[in-house]
Length: 151
Image (tube, rainbow, N blue to C red; front, top):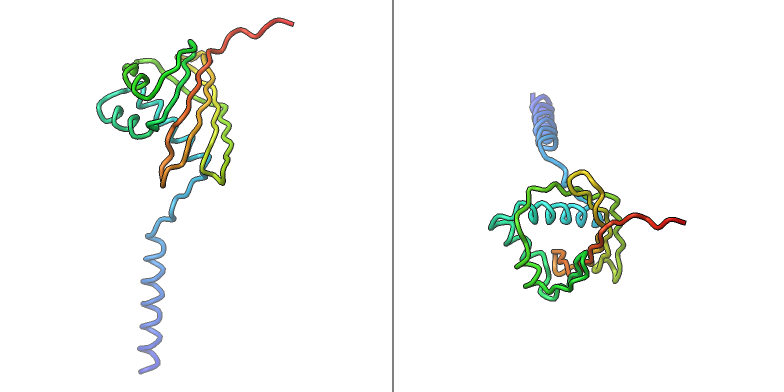
């Protein structure tokens, strides 16, 4: 009888442990590259939507020492960039992402193409710096995509 109780107890423990293991989800880890791509997409969505929560998110994501160069060649600091943000009903889809890491993964340079309202419109270069556990945008350059020169 003692042996049967022991076997029954072991079976119950095994079943309970298996049920707990199945109920747990694996920690979803993304690569640093994908983390930055996701952050860039979140930033773009926030720029277009631009409610108060979006402004707070952008303000926290953009570094205080930010410098940006617009597609028209204007240089902006963080204050100027934030003041120039406006809600937009445009669509803006980025692709062709390339991300390179430097300084032991604490600095990243990202490039991508932006398609506004269905037309490839611009290319961007962003410089991101890891501060603590968060990435901050410290440099941005945007260029309009023109017609390639004829050869």
